[in-house]
Image (tube, rainbow, N blue to C red; front, side, top):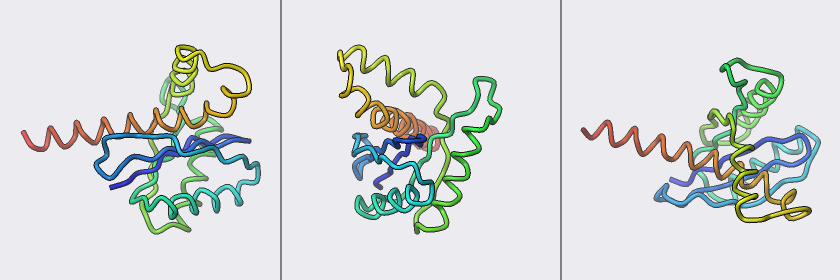
Length: 144
């Protein structure tokens, strides 16, 4: 099943999708949109365009696991998106994904404007890879 991950931002929202085998997660773009309702519609459109069977929205919990204002905004986004798409919308803990994305971009020496263009996509890809790893491990444990 194809799964799409969303890294919600105030100005830019990164998207990633996996292949049908749930093996390879790839960035698919950044939506530059500040209007919450228009953003929801654009993400729903992308989900339809890529024919995904599930959407994962990154949940930026505080390091102690508590919810802050950013996590609440992501929850509202996921709930609103869930109302207009025909596939499940779930939340996934994304603590430290932006740091991981920054480290990856440092390693690849991606700087300046290019870095700003891709960081949200890279974060969405990391969220999706984490979720796919979880699904694989869960299947492995069920088959034991």
